[in-house]
Image (cartoon, rainbow, N blue to C red; front, side, top):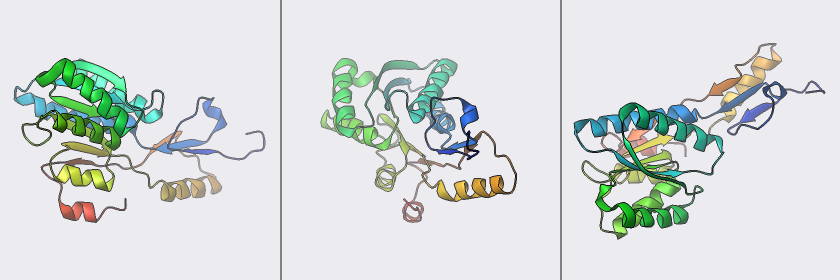
Length: 214
């Protein structure tokens, strides 16, 4: 700042005064969570009880904070039941271990897993299937995931993941636009979000997956 060099943050925020950077660009992590909870509201509107277990990402990470806040707001708004909440540190193996414990504790009461990234959703699915539980589809334990990497979109197509919300990593072109704006004397918004899409098990197609860039 003292040298007059504009700083643009990508993806993650920093624990510092906002006047030290010009703009933050990244996923709308809270909005991602809203896309997921909007789907959940439709799922549980038909009388299925919303009994949720929540696999959080690394605590304090901006993605974790936004996605958790969206879920907690939706739980309060809709009167859903949160059975358990714990960080899986973005890890498949850690999530599988936690999910196995929750299955022993809650059994068939679990109707939804809200996993804050694809890897943890994968671990939860493995634990559920090994316990003989049906996952995804119209009548299995609902699986919510985030990131929408190609392999997990295939799992969405297979019906194992019900709702997978994109975390768009293609930030470079938008950063280029922001740099040009600054060079031309303009001022970007303090927070800039990139477009992100939610994918659903009953509408996704192989053509959609094949057209993805990642």
